[in-house]
Length: 472
Image (cartoon, rainbow, N blue to C red):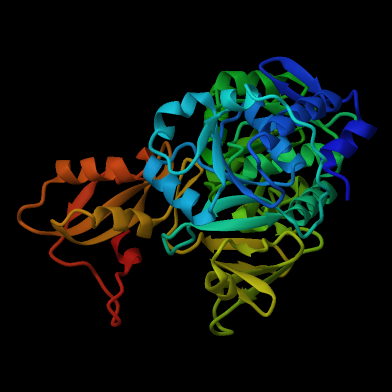
């Protein structure tokens, strides 16, 4: 099938596609700019099917680069700009990208990246070559995002064009769609599925994206009060800040405030009800191409605490160890489920059972079919909307030879929801300052434990596994 941006430029040429820093671009202009970028990328000898590293931010250049990469048939491997060079290098090597393109503002960290790396300015300096736009297929991989699950070892999630299309379709069927009025404010990172899904829905629906480089509560509040925005995706920390700054409701045109990232406090949801804020709790992940379960706004009060019902046409199954158990593992099946893990055949095989994706999350379904998530991927820590994988942090801690054992767990935090803390068994020569220095070179700042607790021993199961839940 034809590339979605080309199709959208044909049928909605003058309609606004992107608003960034008060400058608007029509779908025709986005296509023309992305096509020019694509011709410049062709000068780097990138071929259809090549994996290309992309270290960008929420700005117009990254927006155009994503579309340009798709136009030449390459596959963007999204690099989280909050990671260290060491963490990015693992993903660069694992995905076997032919090269990495990065926003000029990341030039310092790029010096420590592996392989061929080029700034966006390097791309813009190239002469744009003629190229033949590559057609799409639902089974083709559209994007790769790395997620560690609970193993701590990053895996590249293969998201297809079909995954993105049916995710967008399911969302539209749930919320309704009015292409003449709808506009989505993107304040979440576009290197996350929550952000990329907004860009994909823009070309699928033919609606504008209002792109914010970062979450600024004053700027976001202004836009939500303007009447120009109908949809916005946020995490709990963002919503909390918005409620602190705004005492009343937002503009009546705002009809969906999609909330994801972690289980949300009941008090926060109730505060939204009091101000007539159309909050929609949801459940999804990188492997499901964003939300796959969502709560209808009309039932939000009645089903408070629920993530909602499975979106059409996907399926939800709770696999229980015993029929007497309330909770079981959440299994999912449908057209939004990822294709597999990049270069990880065994991990892909283990992630599925009877055609269902085994999420590793626990939950139950009530008699009306509403999902209640009991635990997010076991020991996963969600801090300010960012996933922190305990095993990954523990591996970094154990690089200090004075640490014998380590267990990382989440601690409730008023600002971030959760923060990581570490329980350690150490040698007499252990120095906390030295450990922190090691961690700063290996982990993003938000992953570094906020406190360290020295123990004589860690609680373990009969098989020798550390019982993290006993340390919470």
